[in-house]
Length: 360
Image (cartoon, rainbow, N blue to C red):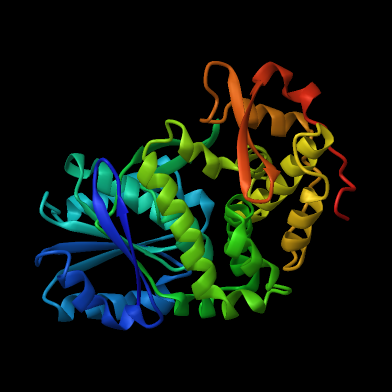
């Protein structure tokens, strides 16, 4: 079992990575939490596969377990579903010494994490991410949020869990498209880190290679993200690196209204920002082609019809990353060398250049 220890200003916790951890969950949680009442929040895709087993594990270790299953998909990151999770906390009379377990992908991690941060001004939280995207990204770092019509993740908190349990065996029950979208975040991190991590990504030549290398990909991704988060918990400076590909990606994801998965939008954003800065002469020639090949190897998109549209730019101008009228883009000087570049939001339409035939 691999253990990554995360230290932030607000909390220290471990991330455990190993196949078969869900079958040891009762013992693992008992080492972190005293006996208490637990609310498991999951969704309609994950519950049929794992809810019963996780509940039995928790109960066998002496915990009292209740559950709430919400609809799968990004639409559950909403005021309406947040009200349901809060109501479930009240119905189960969760006290400040009780806890919430997030069992699912990134949507559940965000939703359950936000619920834990709000109920009684904060109760204990454990993240059990079941998708590749959640395992390499959203379960680590303490960001929680819901979406509103104005933008993605605009209502949220920073709230660290007590433990993150990652069992790569859960990837076997994912549709291929869901596994592949998570790989978009892996390539994003590898391109910034370079070295051994980037070399590992080069070994992935098709979607079947992702689960074959899953443990290594997850481990390298989390080490990179945990190092950044430990230095900058609340995105004061360094943590903005994790927005590589997200600034454009979030814009088209919101405008797509569910047509694009998060990791697919990030893939487009990652390639396009490399292309943009290569045009400007700030990124080494050929870098965008390297990144593009890594993404295309598994079928991730490099372009989308929403690029350069008013809907995309409107979403970008309302992005939570806008500060004093500027969006700070993360770009690569070359593989392994990320940097920042601020742009006035009023200049986005003229500054960003897209060719929707790129990568086709």
